[in-house]
Length: 188
Image (cartoon, rainbow, N blue to C red; front, top):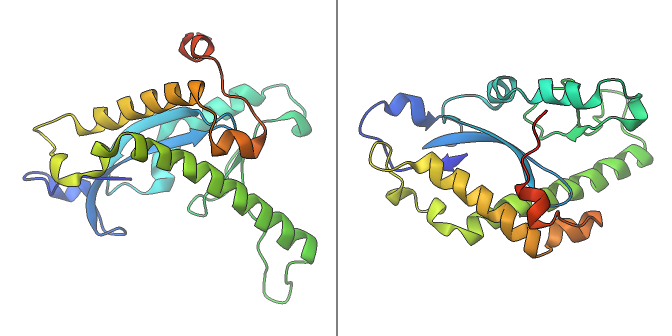
């Protein structure tokens, strides 16, 4: 969710009651090579995360990637707690009444949570490198293409990741693509 300046018209579309601010949203996936490999949007700040996910088409792409693969070879996304389980989305184990998690499942949850934090650092990198996107007073709907600023920042951050390894790459022992590989258009 990217905060914006209080709009003069259509405020109700941009207002997120949950975050108590005006904003727009994107659905993003960061891969272990520190590339934001899927970015869809923008959506209004009022739109729920689950609805944004459904409208992003991400499930369709996961099904296409995994078509014909056995479960052990499929690509899965580790979910934020906001998302309910959907095809290709997995989450942490939950204890239920009378059935606490055993130590192994607790350890898995802790490990996966630490991996999710590494990915969040990658998203923070975009805001750090292109801090203009964080100055909501300058992001005025109708006066400037505020969502485009963020889209370009993600593109430039991905290019930056091609040149400079970062915490996410190191954590997952994964090299980023070369600039040539990243900028090659793959049409399927």
